[in-house]
Length: 503
Ligand code: AHR
Image (tube, rainbow, N blue to C red; front, side, top):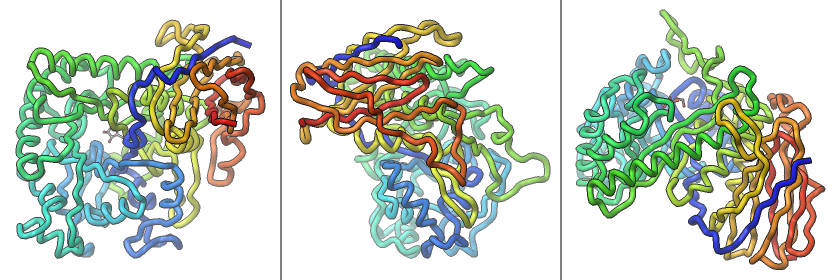
């Protein structure tokens, strides 16, 4: 049993818990849209063909924003293909995923779905094959009340009121050679700056996200952010970060420490943005929109797009099945995002349904929860108020990818309105139990209200449509309070949430 301790103090506030940390992502990719959120044949489908059972799970997951419509798909997308009478919409080749896009769902359907799901839409403009003019037309369609060509087209298509979308991504992963219309940092920085400047002429209140790196292993990482922000600093609010993690070569120890990479990534992007701020004598700060993050096994067959003459509609793609260890990593990545709430102002788990997703569906059939659903839903529900930085004392474990890594990782939130303190913790050890001693100095009189742990002796257990309930977060009966201290045991490869309130 490894001894660990954390000190929770109300004075160590990092910043507010931001609802936008709990965003998600719907891309026209595989079965994310078609037979995912949209399935007109399904018994629970509404007039637009959106599945009611999936909407219910989405509400339970507790997501805030949804980024749309891509992703790599975005860079070949003509948004005008997705408006007007459905029967008249064109079918197009989607080059990013070697699929056929039927355009049954477009911006109007997405906005109606987002309203039903109770989420904030976060739109993206295509800066791969299209440019400033098309971005302005889409913005006009979405946000101008009426009296112009595109705003009147929206009204004619049934949306009397503008959608008033605040968050906009300026393209997607433009640093990636795989991206249609891939650009150098300088080319993209100029285009992003001019697109942002023009978009603000229509709507000065927008929050604009400029593309950062696709991951921290990109050869241009760091230099890309520096150049792009040097060009676009005054015109944008956030720089994006994307990162996917997976267990390679059976190296579970490194995989469990994936949040170390996310911590470094965030720190490096924030430092680069601040360097550009200093050099450019800017007063505002650029923050981070971590708008693609998750566990994704990119090398598996599930991630191989169709090829040759095969251009299917909604193929099975990127349908990773997540196990318990994957869920522990997802819980830890959320801890990292919360810990950086001073600089991470938005985040989107990629993605929402079927495609590297917490929610899975059978066409016309059942919808079910993957293991990664649980830490997300609980963190989104119970992390409220302020994020508290913790003093953590933990033994280290050796990892091939990150060297020595603390076995225990944790963050806490404190809600001054309710007085509740919530601790989120992971035991990243592959084999050792941890005993955790929590010093609640500054929070006298708190007691354990609820303690839930997600773990399983077999960490490779994965949910299926037939069984998504055998392994879920269960009460941790070792959690006890005495003398303003909590003591609890955390099994190896586990994620835990402890809610503390006045007895
Ligand atoms: O989320 C899947 C893909 O990952 C997205 O389309 C792209 O932006 C990223 O590379």
